[in-house]
Image (cartoon, rainbow, N blue to C red; front, side, top):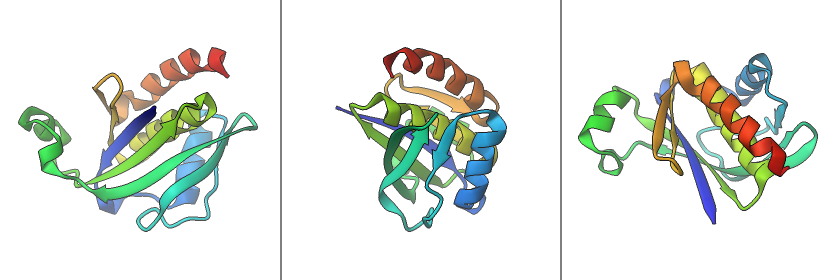
Length: 142
């Protein structure tokens, strides 16, 4: 089973990996990303740890496909034109790193998190609170 957490943002606001890592630290998340990658060109597994536990997720960057969303969702997304997809496979440490990384990215880049499991959207102002709630739910599974 795969779980995708997507961050919809403007391409021009996509941060360097080091800035993304700093945002995770400033949010208080115990996630360490491998920062040696190009966030536009990277496709594939991105290693990460949560509180020292190995995790990580599949990372994909793409242009936003308007056909993926209903018109009312597109209105909410505004001028955001790109999607960073973080995909995990049956691993709670991976899910933890993906959720927290997505929220920090959305917060930093003014993006919107799409929790595809719950089909919920969380704008940058609510992303960190959503991630803290998810962290509390996932932690007992680690």
